[in-house]
Image (tube, rainbow, N blue to C red):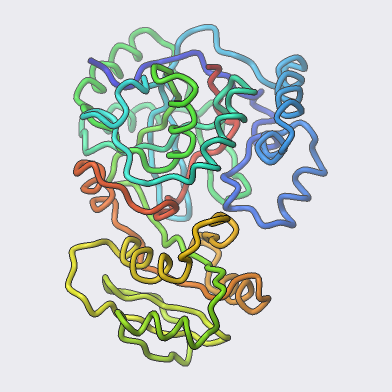
Length: 375
């Protein structure tokens, strides 16, 4: 059985790909989002950000009608290379059947927010199109790696730098001989691990449990994970917050922020001060779970409106944005964590466990709109 199959992708004309595709929204600040939207009405960021799903559908149809998006006639695999500074990762885009999800073949690792799943379901159902691949990982496959490395020596179909400051390159494979070779290599991949896209997967499962969805699969040794740092809005005052935290953590005030380098250590920003926290109990839990169970859940006993009380910011944006959100009183405190390791993610998935929502930020990520898939 082959998990990843070729399909007929929907992709932009080569000369406009960089103008209408978009990085993950988490890469873009408010100013950049606004400027991008104002400059171009027909782009995937407008489709993603619009709360009016009918308008998004109309815009997508306009893009097709005007010939901005063209569907491949033949089934294809798409080879995707992303470069950020010295880091490179090469993956393959194809389709998987969701009937394999959460069994021994396709595994997730992260819990989801129900309200976001519902919103994603409405959006995807309205568009009848998946406009970005689910980011997955697979364990090392040297033969597939060699085959992909041969392919990327040739000129790519697409090559440009996007707003995420990454270079994105895509090769379109529809040659029968090449497809046969790729399928032979893919037979060895027995498991895929979902990295980014859990909300979209859950949304599509609600639409149809046997849906075939578009994924990009990268070898696990090429995947990077950054810290994904929570901001918390609590009704408690600063003294009460510290009292709760000191029950399970050693707490020291810092002169300046430093990046946590050991497991069970955190940095916290509260009342315009940074603190170093060290968990004092001996438990075999990941940092993200310790933070949720022993701090966040105890500061937010009332789970109503949880999405407004919690916000997550990728480590790619640095620490200043955490300070800004707390100093402005939008949030009460912020935390900076060590990134979760990819092997920890895989271990959780294989144990059928789940990390808290928004535990991981994978970087770099595939673009939205470079390849789409009609459902």
